[in-house]
Length: 128
Image 1 (tube, helix red, strand yellow):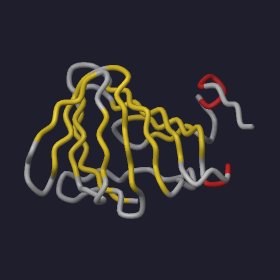
Image 2 (image 1 turned 30 degrees about the vertical axis):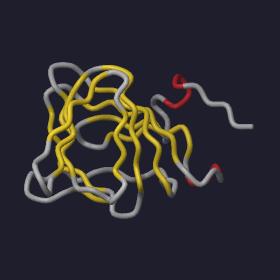
Image 3 (image 1 turned 135 degrees about the vertical axis):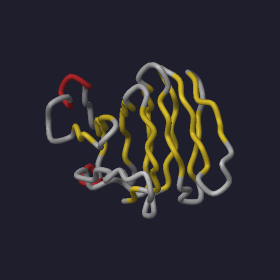
Image 4 (image 1 turned 90 degrees about the vertical axis):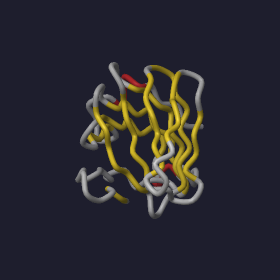
């Protein structure tokens, strides 16, 4: 059984600053579960062009509000507490936090190694 508390992950090697926020990684590849579980904070008033070429991702909003915008179509979807979105086609997307931090619980499959961080560039999607 694996038990971890957020207070134990904060300020450890499992907390990664990914550019416009922080990813606190409860489960990683080395934990042997086959997927990762993260508590991710997206900083208020930021927009990040992201793409996961090697992972599927599902996110569930537990606080804040924002948008996920499909890069290919421009279709915009509101994110608020209780909203889930899944990137089932390695979708390039903009993740936008509005006037307050956006907090998401995320699952990645396959699991993250743990060191991954975005390289944010407004012209091309950050990918890992």
